[in-house]
Length: 224
Ligand code: AMP
Image (cartoon, rainbow, N blue to C red; front, side):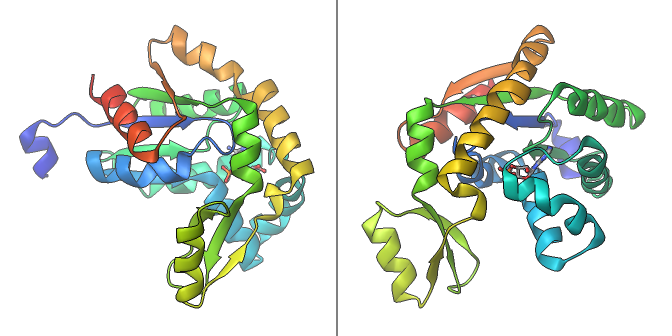
């Protein structure tokens, strides 16, 4: 394929960050810039829940409480997503792994295909900023493809409403659930950073400031 002929490096990236770090805002730019497939376990789980599938019914209670879905269930999601990406293509994992045993599952899955991660990008944001971002986060629905905005962004709110859309809050963006998701991140996901630092894969970036500035830092971290 074209990438192989041009010997452009294949990126197999994990994006890690607390909820509200801006992973979904950043992801489109990274996948476009580096030609990556996006694997977002949270999106996939929400789609399964909305569709009322067996997997969705298994996962729903955990997602609603802001807790991690059991490794076995989310492992099935991971395998299905990885199987859909040709080995010659790069990918960006958004939301997986979220604990050390998921990281081991991921390593094993990749090893089975003769692959390995090339980089882990960790987004850093202070807790107070996370709470502000998540409690004001809304999805504009009913106006084309749903998109994320913040209630403080008057122009975005007006754009959504002018197109006949309505603002919907994710159930797990309610304050009590935000606190739970943050606690889960600190206790279960953050320890992964040490593992990836040790493996020489980790790049941390400051994820405060404008989306444009964060994007530039992320692209630089994946290019260096
Ligand atoms: P996200 O959209 O990535 O914030 O994920 C939303 C919710 O889906 C999380 O709070 C978890 O309940 C669940 N989830 C997503 N990815 C995983 C994962 N890798 N392991 C366990 N639960 C997950």
